[in-house]
Image (cartoon, rainbow, N blue to C red; front, side, top):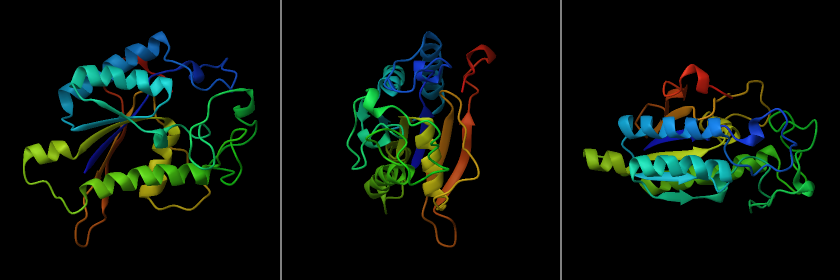
Length: 222
């Protein structure tokens, strides 16, 4: 199984004047250009059979560009929304004053403290990302591709968020609750993991992280 994690294009939540509670904001004009650039790169370089997207606006818009470029239908999934945008039980929240991000709480440093009002903590967030990853594994487990068509069918593009990519790393590397390293990804940066159960070898392989060759210097943002 091949998983290509694509962070969304620049959104208004990435700008310095974001007020930290209206967290379901669309792409900026620059973000739209980034989304178009990554969509064209994926079309030319990656053959995938599935396209997943978080249900937040910024990922939805980014995935729309990829869908149009690749012809893949978008499969929306609440489990790959950004941290703090879901309730502790995993259900999605609507952004409001009551669900704003809590000042001074950084999920990976305070993994058992909620990061938003009425929202989840880092460990609850990691759990829902884990359920998404394991659902992909179950979809293809014990089905090693023998043809190019089967390999394409087991290649998945996931349009998500910086926090989701960080949680993906923590799942794959089986780390504990507290973090001393942040996994940073540019807007529309691409991360490629392969899941290949093999005797006497690790099941997961990291091929690259934060690939951004599709972005010119004037399109680079975090």
